[in-house]
Image 1 (cartoon, helix red, strand yellow):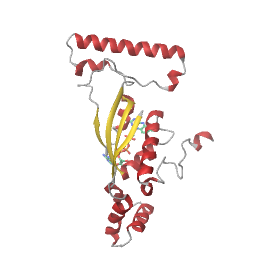
Image 2: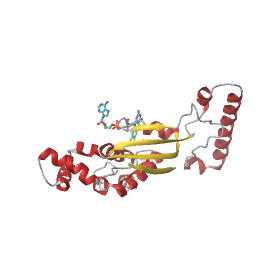
Image 3: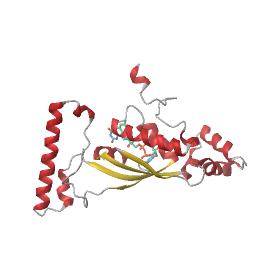
Image 4: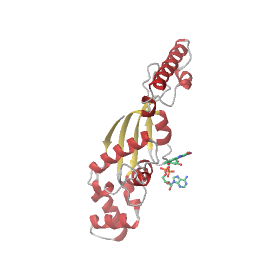
Length: 205
Ligand SMILES: Cc1cc2nc3c(=O)[nH]c(=O)nc-3n(C[C@H](O)[C@H](O)[C@H](O)COP(=O)(O)OP(=O)(O)OC[C@H]3O[C@@H](n4cnc5c(N)ncnc54)[C@H](O)[C@@H]3O)c2cc1C
């Protein structure tokens, strides 16, 4: 998995969202207005800060989960145009840990790629041949979210209840968001009250 933040607010996020918060109350203190807005749940001021990530080397299974987030904008690698004859795949750790199943998994993927190549050679359009590709097939996308939606995404997807692959992605996106805009993301993370741990304390109880 490779994750980059490729765009973030050019203006200091505290000034940007703080100006929006100060507009609402007639305050002259953007920083303090932003703090108050975030404390009180007046989260729409966070919608002015927008972040774009480039994500590669993740599975189509992850993509299906990711695109459920309706307030995000996506541009996804198209299997209609890209040749899937040599598609790289994601292999879950649980399968890698089982040598017999791992061999079978690799054989199955090779069979699928073989069928795909034969179908394309036989004149089947790529957009039809792709129907045989698995959820494991790697994909890539560019995703844009505003800070309010990102915080919501982190609440759901950094949580131990989310699947490992999207959780790994969400934590990496959160790390990059905190580096870019600490004032907006320092307290972001999984949703359990007060929880900002990578491992779920509830699960370890
Ligand atoms: C652990 C986990 C397990 C899951 N399991 C399943 C599953 O088994 N099956 C399944 O189908 N999905 C599953 N999902 C997906 C889940 O139901 C949501 O579709 C997904 O997490 C997107 O969340 P969202 O709707 O809050 O986010 P977004 O789409 O990003 O929306 C953000 C917020 O905007 C508001 N909003 C957006 N659109 C509307 C609307 N039309 N009406 C009202 N309010 C709206 C809501 O407040 C929403 O929380 C799972 C998610 C998680 C985290």
